[in-house]
Length: 302
Image (cartoon, rainbow, N blue to C red; front, side, top):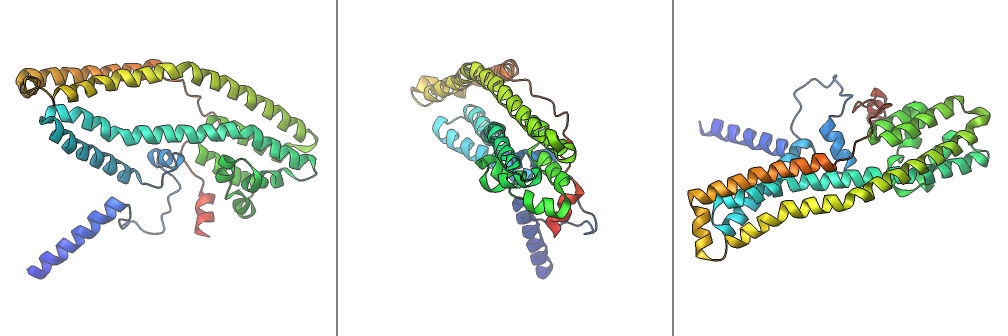
């Protein structure tokens, strides 16, 4: 019995650590190959993270739990500490969302310079494929990262499948349009290739100017919404740690009701502010969702 209990404990520990680290054994047959990346995993990849969705959510919940213990020691009441702890648990999501937005915006801003690099190679007599390969070495930093595997994939799979892989990895409407034009230019460019690239550069520059104006106009509203949402809870923590009268009140049933009502109103107000201040995202007309082609799996396997 002791041996059986020890084996069960070891198996449980192995599976628990595997799930936490994302290295749990896969019971499915090795012949089945996944050709899709989940939306959550793609979201993390675009944010520059190698975490799995499970690791991300476990880390977020763990951060919230640690914050809850810290606020509980300061405030002395669990209902006062719970709201800031929930906010802390959502902080990684907000940070990754900002990081993802920043990375995609850097790629979008880099496209005019990247296209000029391609155009320079085409003007010098090189092919379009050689010009795209040059992005992996001499292009802007965000595009060098995005096209780092393009030379190898283009030789193994072809130029068009390699571009399709990059398009699905970026999953960005602006990049979709550029890559679709590059695909068509590669297939049917001919004598009009240089003119197509020049027109594409002008279009991307105009789109970026419009997007920058929209972001600048909404910056003040976003900052004000953050201050309005955070300031009351900072004051609440201060009141709950100073005079004894405030501490007694927030330990009473009336204090719990006030904190609960304030938490509900804070959530409702935050949601309304996010809805009012959000930007309408451009729909991916040329995108294929989060599906990565089977050619990518073959390239990785090799």
